[in-house]
Length: 183
Image (cartoon, rainbow, N blue to C red; front, side, top):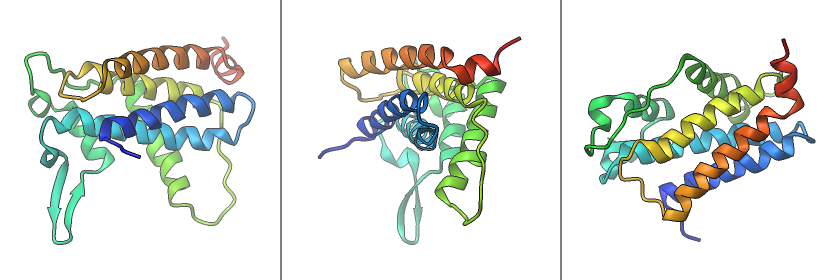
């Protein structure tokens, strides 16, 4: 097997889409949606702010190189000076809903799952489609619209674009989304 930061991020995104479809009939799949969305966000954020130099996304410690954190990567993607790598470059600009969705995904969902403390924990599923939709919108922007040396094959650009559109359209038809958005 061979992975690049781009192929790894795309794998996470494809898994997120797969688990989102499974979650329509299996609530346990939402746990894997959370991990996969977080991995895709982090991966494409690293790709977007890395440019042509991996040192842009690493820090030196006494133990060697360390990848910048998820929060550091997202902050870097929002920094216009850091993201200005070409004349076509665009920094990430999060809406309030996107920022809230990412914060909830990371702090209320992903981190407690990843660093699970033995306890009984109930996860509210209403709102999950909206969180996923906002995260997918950000993933799509990071992968396709920052225009910062992301090394994807032509087919991969099209795959990300169609996967984002199809998955968002699917999420908007799910009972959880419809129940949460009924007026």
